[in-house]
Amino acid sequence: MSADGADAAEPDRTRRAAGNRAATDTWVSFKRWLVKTTRNPFVTFTSLVQPVVFFVLMAEVLGAIAGAAIAQSFDASVSYVTYLTPAIVVQSALAAAAVSGIGLVDDIETGMFDKTRISPMHRGAMFVGKLCSELVRIVGQTLLILLLGYGFLTLKSGATTGVYLRTGLPGVVGVVLVAVLFGGVFVAYSNIVALLTRDREATIMLANLLTFPLLFVSSAFLPLTVLPDWIRTVAAVNPVTYAVDAIRALMLGRDVTTVVEVTAFGGLWNTVVPAVAVLAGVNLVLGGVAVRLLDRASRAEVQ
Image (cartoon, rainbow, N blue to C red; front, side, top):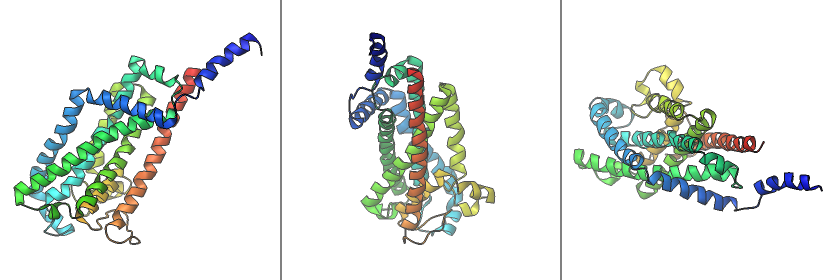
């Protein structure tokens, strides 16, 4: 091979160098994004305070008028605080995940993204590491909301943990896992938007555009039986509905499905299994698109 050919091949060998394994690259990416998030006090403060404010306001405003609807759909033993808790868990996860792409836009604007994408780092690891760092925040927020809901219910009615979360510690683990699975959907979505637009304002606007409409066209705040028919139709294809129903089933220990009639699994699993299947499927699709866009960006830089 000529000297020119060897020189031309050298950059390609550099780009394809063995480097770290995918797991190691994922860990490096995870630590970087986690540190970046924790060093931003505004993000941390907002993530912790927003669910508290939203929970108290929704419980006080809607709780006064939703009691009859809850009793009609469930029974008098289910308080609106217990009914609302899954909605706040999902709302918090959605808010945290939907702005994930802003960090990626910041990297693009500062040139850090260009440095990373021409490195030998595994493309999937770049996304998975970022995803995991966002999910850690969602786990913390979910646990905070569960404690907040219990404290709020205790102050209002003196209820015990058995009334608030009827499946106990396994239910807590299940709630966290569903919140993480749901968060993954919108972390992927947000990063797709960031990679397509490469614009901070567009990413924020598209994130805010979805957050509240998706919550209100679902079973989050009121039973679907008391809502208009068109909302029930939209709720059937809304990931928020499946996440809220799964968490609510885990908290109440019963089948509470609102859009899919399943009887094959028994009890609460008739709600949880289909919901997890739907959320996992959407995760795979959107996560695959996000990784593909990262890979395409890397190839574009090489060419």
